[in-house]
Image 1 (spheres, rainbow, N blue to C red):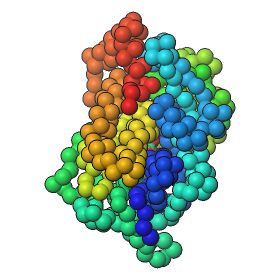
Image 2 (cartoon, rainbow, N blue to C red):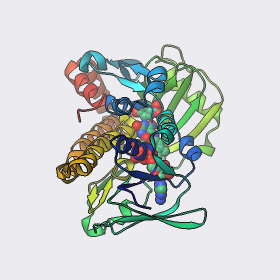
Image 3 (cartoon, protein in one colour):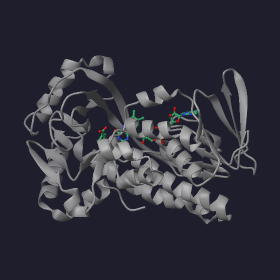
Image 4 (tube, protein in one colour):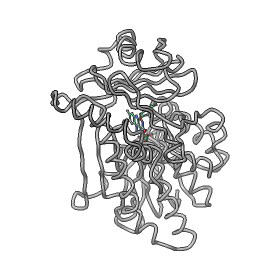
Length: 389
Ligand code: FAS
Ligand code: PHB
């Protein structure tokens, strides 16, 4: 088959890009390795910046998000036994929306058929060809048959473990990485949140995050050593740990209940700066990873897609190549600022194995300064709600 843009990956990046291109009349096809149910089964991000919600509104696929999403006008950092509320609306005039990535992905998937967005699920072995030429193509295997998509451009939206980065020759690659010496153990449960807003806590027992998906569904995380496996944690052990970290801090205390999901995610900062190579463009986790402390991962994917869709549409509609030429530098400017913010909050809020009493005092002093400084709170707030495009 032939199309204008072949998109690899049906996560938020690939689906948002596909819908934006189709809405502008640009032909595209999304090729996804997994089934739709598998993609929806991954529990990931929970906080959406207005950049992300704005794309859903631009697409007219925002009805459920507006009905079910929670508008959050502040969030909390906790040092020891007290909360520091960051009043993001008073400080920035903006807000964030709590609406799970799973639900956003579901909305985008559900809207695909009526909008003519073709998604090929369970497409195995996607491979990229001739990305340095003028006639790139993608091959994959579906139901035992090898298929080919000839296109003008390939969008690598295939996440951190996908094939797109590997299609770029080593001579062209610039990448930066930092791995953190701990992971996040997460639990999703149908229990009311312990607090009306998110709490990021730096406790003597380690970092913990109290988040939510709705007034009846909570999402919690605690920092765990990299050697921990999810099998090492019974639900009771995790609820006990969460109660120890949040009961004294939160308005309602931790409510326990059966886990809908429990998983451990590693933390890393990663930027693959070669976001364009020939006719291949990378967007989302295929090009960058942030520690989830700043709630930036999904939102960075959205800003990449906002830039890339605009550039591709200008090319196909007006023959204008300026956006494509400027995509990488424009996306990287926002990516690196989000990487900095996520790294800053991760260093501030986690207990690093190599740290001692002095480093813990530095964290306490920084949080004490945040508590006393409107300027610092404003700096944190404007990064948390998302820097302008
Ligand atoms: P995704 O990884 O979501 O999607 C890539 C898609 O490409 C997947 O569906 C994959 O199956 C597909 N794919 C891969 N290889 C392929 C191939 N060969 N052929 C075809 N398709 C292929 N962000 C936050 O803000 N908060 C969080 O709490 C948070 N938690 C996270 C936990 C985990 C375990 C992970 C991995 C990420 C987390 N993130 C979080 C970040 C996450 O939300 C990403 O930023 C977001 O999913 C980015 O979306 P995509 O770029 O679409 O990548
Ligand atoms: C979540 O609800 O999953 C969540 C919220 C904020 C973060 C990370 C994860 O920073």
